[in-house]
Amino acid sequence: MLEAKKDKMAKDFDGIERRQYVRLSKENSVRFRVLSDDKTTALTDWIEAKTQNISLGGMCINVIVLSDEIKNVLEKNRFIEIEMNLTPEDDKIHIDAERAYIKLIGEKKWESSTKLYEMGIQYVNPPPSVIEKIREYILKKYLEEYKEK
Image 1 (tube, helix red, strand yellow):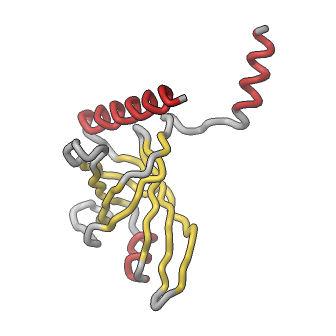
Image 2 (cartoon, rainbow, N blue to C red):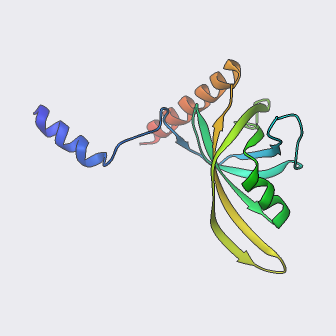
């Protein structure tokens, strides 16, 4: 009986999970701005994006880039400041983060070129209160999904 459970688990999970934290696949509005390497100066205005997933260690976001200037800043600079509401009722949370990767996932040509990027984000020294809010949010969403099944 135990062997059957192990075999089923092996079929359900194909591969090695390298992430430290579970990621919740959830689309959420977020905005960020790119910071200088010393994190003292904002190099862009706030840029609107959507989360693809979120965890206690980071998130993946999708961002539409309309100008080459913004694209160059995103590709060259890795520190960002994030601002978001986990739910409409919650206060905004602020997190300093580091871009782990950026990749082009789509491109449209209209009057000007529009590019859709996916960015992997890793939090940098997040306040414990912010991590607790994210933990509560993820747990609540997982429980809601579990109840629906």
